[in-house]
Amino acid sequence: MRAIVQDKYGDASMLRHEHIPLPEVRDNDVLVRVHAAGLDRGTWHLMTGKPYLMRVAGLGFAGPKDRVPGRDLAGEVAAVGAEVSGFEEGDEVYGVGRGSFAQYAVARADKLARKPVGLTFEQAAVVPISAATALQALRDHGRLEPGQRVLVIGASGGVGSYAVQIAKALGAEVTGVASTAKLDLVRSLGADHVLDYTRDDFAATGVRFDLILDIAGNPKLSRLRRALTPTGTVVIVGGEEGGNLTGGMSRTLRALALSPFTRQRFVNFINKERASDLDRLTALIESGQVTPSIDKSYPLEQVPEAMRRLASGDVRGKVAITTH
Image 1 (cartoon, rainbow, N blue to C red):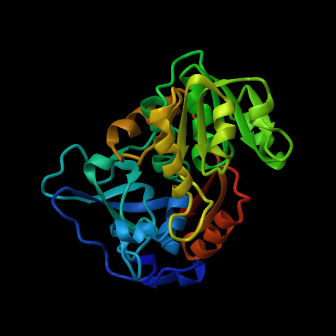
Image 2: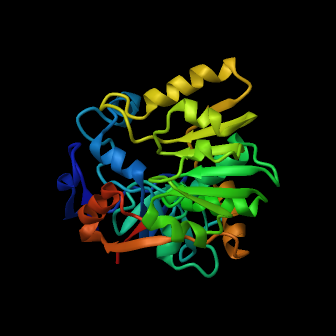
């Protein structure tokens, strides 16, 4: 099969387009004939190996533990492991796998779900990780309730574009923060209000938010606190600032250290990959409340170019990879 492979950490020049054997299918695995894959900041971090603490966490010291990058996928079931039930050859699925920048990839059965009716494979492929992260941030960690005010910082990105839509579906009043060029996208996603981060200070509007999603941002904690209600919650998702060692985690650690000493909550979490959240997302998609926003699609051999576009910061929504 054709695949993108990487043996050492680095920039997009480390990625090569090669022919390799199909992956091994274990008892609880599903072999998926990948039609499309999704690209996100997590994939970029796995490519670069930064921040370095990620390597200590078991992702590989000199190079990626998984030689074929990519996790989000959508495609057709090609084979199932001996312990798998609920899927059979030919089923159209989406979810999280290992090595999705390839024509075939394996995924655990409990990280897959039926592809939403009405979505193309490209649309489905950009849903799993980013949309599930947004769902968990709002529902599980933000404890969002109908009628609350939500501020989404980074509303035009992969997670943010889903967060705006899911928050609206959960009954919130949503304000999205983005750059000037991306405000129209945020409005189209259903945001009640938009703020241009190049001109508007979200902490100086006079509005206090029950929940703030800070997605890969870098606002000072003091600004976040000023924009929050006295008992509000900040959920920090990712972070792109800081040095090579800890990256954005240093600010997150300061926030978590502060949280026990104030009535305001600061929360950080690791996304859980599970079929139950995919099923919930499928319901939101099929009801028309959530629609994937694709910035651009690239063929498999152009993954390096797709990575460079992602790193440029110009992406609106998500980037998809087509594999056949």
